[in-house]
Image (cartoon, rainbow, N blue to C red; front, side):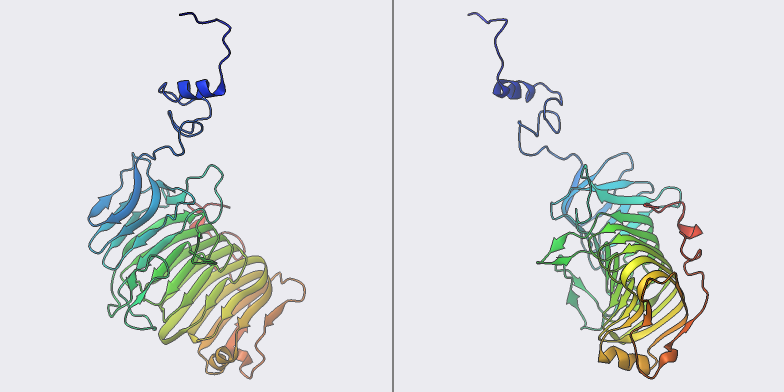
Length: 373
């Protein structure tokens, strides 16, 4: 048998040879896989499916979430400080903390936790987001089911806990589900007051940054950066406090509140909402609800406060919605402070504020751990 030294190799032969040589070469995406070798490379240390026990991720391991990851009743997911957890794009991947389960995210200012897309060129909407379901009261029944994952939430335990989240960033969330609906960065469904939420960022989301559906959880240090929808949405009877909130790059509403009657009370202080934005800084929608804002700074919006519909206007007249001090800085052309034309024009007071701490600039408490600035 003879082999010519000048024998011309075909692309097919090259592919066969490189697919079995134990090396990453040619157009392969991994060792002997991807490209011309196979459709997908196996993902090492993948996370998906249901978790029923305590699961502590190891800081020495690079994990990738490859599908829905659901932490079930009685289980915990523990994420160490400094971990970057990646999520495979376009794989219907999201994280659910079900009722009775807990998320412990041990981030620190020096070593925050980041959950991000595994794509080479990450984009908003690459993956879903985080859904936390608790047992605290909601105003649309004793129990309801989450929009995503169909997980129960709500109940009669206002001091329920779903764990704690500290110094934590989620980015490239907001995948589409059920036609045009999108995930939020983090959604709190009936989450209880003994849950800790401190210094958390939603970055580059195709949906809302944060969304609260009822519950009694409080939050401190929320940062929303580059959201295609609202920076923060509140509904379904949320009763809680948010202190220190900084937003920029929001395409829809900075903070939107609706359907928050029957037990709901939103107490929100120390907020900076930074444009440019052609919509509104604050939206008070149908369904009303008791709301108190204090120390609000806005910059470069077209509309300051939108009162949406006749029912919301009745809430204004009943003093259910009040703003003790708000500043409309650097207003856009044809700026309107509010579209409300009713009798209670004193529902807000205008003055100079510092908002989240440094007016339009990133506040000191966020400088060392947030991304995108």
